[in-house]
Length: 511
Figure 1 (tube, helix red, strand yellow):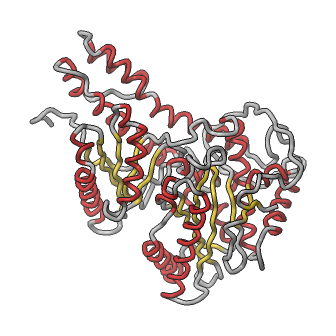
Figure 2: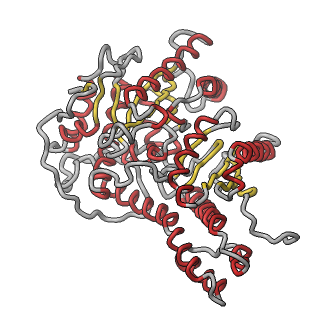
Figure 3: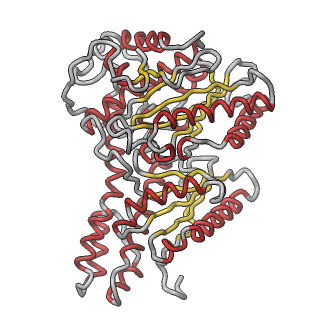
């Protein structure tokens, strides 16, 4: 069945009994369910999860989440211990041993050595630790590929078989959606173009420019596939809502009104298609898809479109209903039933490729629904914002964890001021209210194949940092906002390169 606004959630089929979670076997690397071969009907699956759930991937994703977030969450307890011992005669050596043991790295010697003069500069030390932890997280992502996101050949083939040559997704910049690709939808990050924006309100002109570049590559270089194939560019928007507290924990950019969030997302999608068709031709290779995400359970909501791209804002297909309707079936039966459910809820003449792709997303989402049920008790404890830092600029391919980062995607502060102000407001409650600074990582990716690209990326970052310092001068003067500038060559998988920071770690005249 399809849910309408205001309807009480009802299952598509008799609800299976709620099952208790049980432990799963750990793995060191995630293999996205979308690239795993279908399991035969004879496969035995645990009775406490959906037959299409991938327990190995869930275990590996949990390990990555706990290790990465744990590294950030250990910072404050360590600094609290340092605060209690800062008057000890051997404070510096003890502090370094503590930091090395519990955080894995030593702290800036200058900040520790100056503690005897007045008070330990906790604000600078906190921001420095956040930046150091971010750098280590980024390095691990690019050097070790812990999410297995580079191996996207199987998913890319399935995407192409569904009739699409490129997948472009804009989730809201809210940190509760930062894991949309790798966790919620289980898509290898190498197979998707991701551009978060506050309220999922992507820049239409910029998206048209990227569509043009994509089509140019297809016709001139046969990338990502031959231009002779009848495939389309798929643009997707992911808005969000809260099933537990819809009036307060929805999208801040839309006043926690999920109807407004969905309408705004659909409007942007329609404007994008209209812009492409007005500038080129009717029927240009653009398809649209609107998704919603429940930030409490990670279940997705799909507004199934017809062949002409029309989808109802008042009707949707809920991932939790799909879960309950197929939980008692065999894997093959469940997979077939999901496709039938999607077909049943297409509002008009169907595009078979789009329906198969939606069925794939719903199948992938089943693993994430079980992930939240097994490891987070069914709903996340951090229903609201709990991000660790703000990411500003262009890049951050390495961030795929819920509530780790608030994104503000931009070229200039002026064009992204609305996104930035939302982020600063969020961190005023998270950090400033406790006397802690807002850590902001400014990042610009570049292509080393383009002459002078690195220098221009650094210049862009420096201009953004100056604009941030001007816009939030009061916070900066009080030591309540610190910035780090980094750049990265997007031509490969090398880690980002730190250029500068607002934290002083070398004495005047030092090197």
